[in-house]
Amino acid sequence: MGCLDRFTRPERLCSDQKLFCQQCQVSQESLEQMSMRKLPLVSCFHIKRFEHSSIRKMSRKIDRYLHFPFSLDMAPYLSSSILRRRFENRIFPFDGDEPMHQTSSPQNLSYAGHYVTYLHLSSQWYKCDDAWNTQVNENIVRAPQ
Image (cartoon, rainbow, N blue to C red; front, side, top):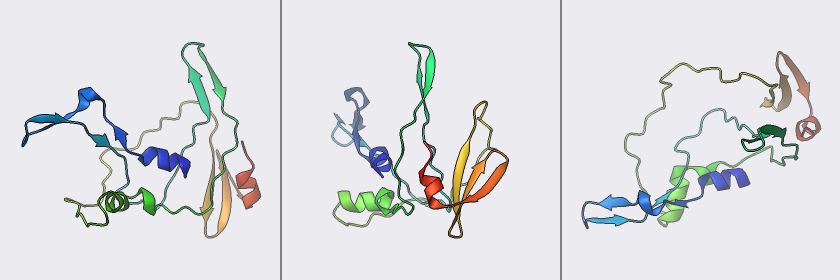
């Protein structure tokens, strides 16, 4: 949840990125904030597992444990929730709300490495490890580095 909080927190734009107001003819300070307009049916969170140093010309594995809930309330990260909090529950419609369409075919960007994921489906956990899928319990899901 801390990662999602950080991803969606407001950020002040640099002074060279001020927005010009046509009405008052002045460049204004502004904030930028990421949010999610609509949640997908399935969410996949990719956790960065390697650090790369261009100075040392090396990479190292991040082996800290990540604590996460098995149930996640995504409401605080929705655009509608963020706007309501910012503007005291006034309702703002989104113009042009329509389903997102994929505009290009997906490309495989995995050139090297070994990828493992855990899938929660019908109240059961599965470990997907390359071509092998095995049923596992919650303790296994929480255990890997």
